[in-house]
Length: 117
Length: 114
Image 1 (tube, rainbow over the protein chains, first blue to last red):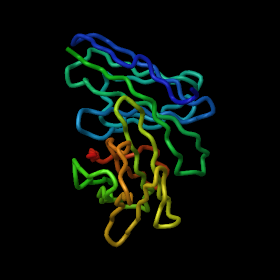
Image 2 (tube, chains in turn green, blue):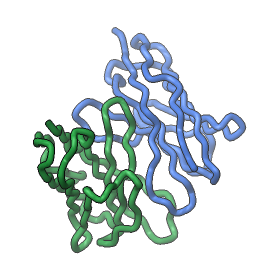
Image 3 (cartoon, rainbow over the protein chains, first blue to last red):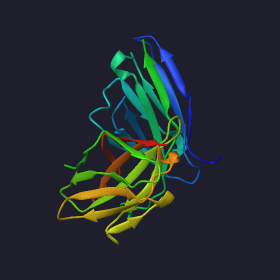
């Protein structure tokens, strides 16, 4: 399967612990996105990378959240000092785009479901 | 600012009958509009997209949507529902200004009764 993969698929943690999620995009895709989806809602944008550069961050991304994409390949999303409100599905998507293109189809991974007890 | 409103949180139809999922958008710029489908335990899948070409857009699995600028609508339709269409559907907008993020609606859960 050459789609977007995410690991782990499920994570249960206690409040105050740190967690890290990984996303492996489609290999030729230069853009990578993180979204968060809470129960009964649509996904909400968190952050976006083009190659290794983090170009945009949502106000939802508090200082407890950090994302990296070293070498422009896989990405990690870390949440420090987790809170119960962080419980959600964290989705990763990737796409290929050039500087002149505004639209590019985003391909989504299956997500990581985080439960904070 | 951009936003999408999905007018129905749940829609239930009988197998073989038409499907209509309603979506209205708000955007200050010329938008790109999409419908994504999410089956349980599976990733979001693109059904169709509108990017300022033809206003009637055909997608996968027999779905289509019509962009109506005067009504700021982008409703999703299918002539005949199949049991496998049962899923969550999201209307999505992307501004045509270089911003890459997608803005999702809150979703419509489609149930298909036998």
